Every structure is written in C-alpha cells, then in structure tokens.
Length: 414
Ligand code: HEM
Image (cartoon, rainbow, N blue to C red; front, side, top):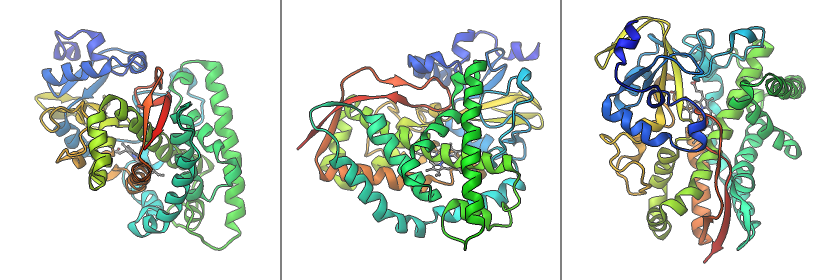
C-alpha cells in the first residue's frame, strides 16, 4: 500500500505518539525529538485510533492551519481530536461545537462569544480575578504537603468560568466534573465508564437548559449564556449544539488554564533558575506567561481531516486522511525554540508558540487565560511564594489534554 511505502523504516512504537500510556509515564517527548530529526510529517499506518498523519514541525502546522478550506475541523468528518467515535457507538449523541465546525457556520458562532473576551472585558474582570487569586494564595498552608492541582489550578480556573457564565457559585465544582467527563479519553475505551460519562454530560445539559430558560426571560447581560440567547447566530441552536458549545467553553477554559497553572509548579522544581530569575525581575512575568504556556502546551494536539489531496513537505496527504498537529512538538521545534525543554522567561520569541493554535480557530479565550496566569504569577511574586514538588506527579491518560491529575507540593514563603 502506498501509505506503508511512504513510511518505510520507522517502527510503529516511534510513529504512534498518540498512544496514551506514554503520556502517563511521560516517555513521549524524546519520540517527538526523534521524529522532528527525521522530518516534519510522519504517517502512522495503524493505532488504537486508526491510521493518522503526525505533523511535528512549527512551520508545517502553520501551513495546515492556514488552509481550513483543505483541512476540515468538522465533527461530521471526525472532529478535532485523534480519537474518532467508535463505529459500534454510532448511536451516541453528537456534540456539535464551533471549534469542530468549518466556515461559514464557525464564523457566526465564534463571533457570538468573542465579545466576552475583548480587552475591555479583560479590564473589567481584572480586579475580580486578582482578588480571588490573592484570597486563595493566602489560604494555602505553608510547609505542609497539598495537591496544587486541586487547591490552586482547579479552584482558580473553575472560579473564572463560573464568573464567565454567571454560574451559581456554590455549584462551581460541577463545572470541573463535567469538563473532566467531556475529555475523559480513558472512559471512551470502556463501555460502562463511557455510559457514566454521558450521564454526567446529560446532567450538565439539564442544568444549563434550566439556566437558559431562566435567562431567556430576562434582559441581556454580559454573561456567556445571555450572549448566546440574544445573538442571531446562536439563539436557534439545537439542544445538542447548545450543549456542545457549553462543553467547548468549559473545557476550553478549564483543562487548559488549569494545566498551565500546574505547569507553573513543575517549572519551579525542574527549572528553578528560570523561575527565580522571573521572581527577582517581575518585568519578566509577562513574557514568562507566554513561555510557560509554550513549555506546558496544555492541549498537545488538534486534529484535522483532509477534504482534498494536498502536497506538503514532499508527501501527499490524501482526501479523508486524519492529520494530527502536535503543538507540543512544534513548541519544542529546535529551529524556532532552541533548548525548548528549558523554561526561560527571557526567551525572545516565546510568543510565537502554537499552544493557542493558529488561523481561524485560534483560541478565543487566549487573553483571558494569559490574564489569569499573569495574575497568579504576580501575586506569587508579591508574596515571595514558591513551591516544590514532593511526590510523583500523576499525569492525565490522554494525548489530547496534556496535564496533571495530582501534583503534591510544599509551599514556602519569603
Ligand atoms: C492556556 C490556556 C488555553 C490554551 C492553551 C488553549 C488552547 C486552544 C487551542 C489549541 C484551540 C484550537 C486552536 C486551533 O484549532 O487552531 C483553542 C480554541 C478555543 N479555545 Fe482555548 N485555550 C486556552 C484557554 C481558553 C479559555 C480560558 C477559553 C474560554 C473560557 C477558551 C476557549 C476556546 C474556544 C471557545 C475555542 C474555539 C475557537 C474556534 O474554534 O474558533 N480557551 N484553544
């Protein structure tokens, strides 16, 4: 077969960087380095997710993202992650969301939520986020082991989302539970767990349908639900589309910002030099935020499906083939980011990272995420706070969400 000839010479275990166990025991980074040495594009002929192309270079991911006319995000063609829906589960409900739509539908729905993320909105949210962050940091124990993921990363990102949706504050941890269910790659492999996962998502649908009905009776307000109710592009969404877009905003805001915050604890232990330099020179924090997002890259990939044959880097991607763009690898691409494994707040081009994607789907919440992380680092700097990892980090079983379930730390001040 043509595809096998294209890939002659490389063993499957090197090519199949999507296999999730290697993301838990974290042996995947050297594989990406090896693949980059051998070329920008690789075809994995078989895997638990079927055959797929991997794009591992910065330049070629930008090229693919720049051609949404050729490389589709549409859920109807397979969506935006490496995992397809299993054929024997074809009766499962679909969750159409605009990250997994092509133009023109994507354009209208994105435009509806974009006003929640303008610079003016960020100024409006700044004081609130800072106050909550400061209160949280002041409540943390000094000199005792605690889980940074739960106490800091999850708490801050969930609070931010509750404010964006104007979600009942006392129920905010439901947002975390639903976000985890939506992205649970482990559950997708097991029927019983998958059913429980869908039960969570139905619970979420019922909860948000109530909020929708309540707010539909009221005047427009600057929360995301009210914005969707009153916009022409979204007011007639089907219940599935509404649920899909909620999952998108919850996962978009939750797993990503959360895992960058967890990354901030990791770099303090793994790259104390860079971290201490940033803490001694707070003017480095702004660039340090981009560097942290590059270094962590909380979504390891996005996937596209080719609509037509396309020649790239001397190879032909055929219509219908799955293309996985590994942001984690692009953000370690030696030709753009020398010593990319190192966290360096003075890296001159940190902002060129691709962790937010590129092109028409580039992350709509990027400014909000940067604001949150900026405030976290500034408030830690003011308090002379630092943490050290004191136990084995537990990583997420996924080649999509690149992050942590648990991070035991000890905090010091002064
Ligand atoms: C460090 C934090 C974040 C990272 C790394 C991140 C990453 C991404 C990536 C990789 C994409 C897809 C880009 C592409 O296909 O080219 C995306 C899209 C998106 N993100 Fe984020 N995200 C973050 C924070 C947020 C936040 C805080 C929100 C909102 C609360 C959000 C909402 C969205 C939405 C709605 C989209 C879909 C955009 C579209 O399809 O047009 N993200 N994000």
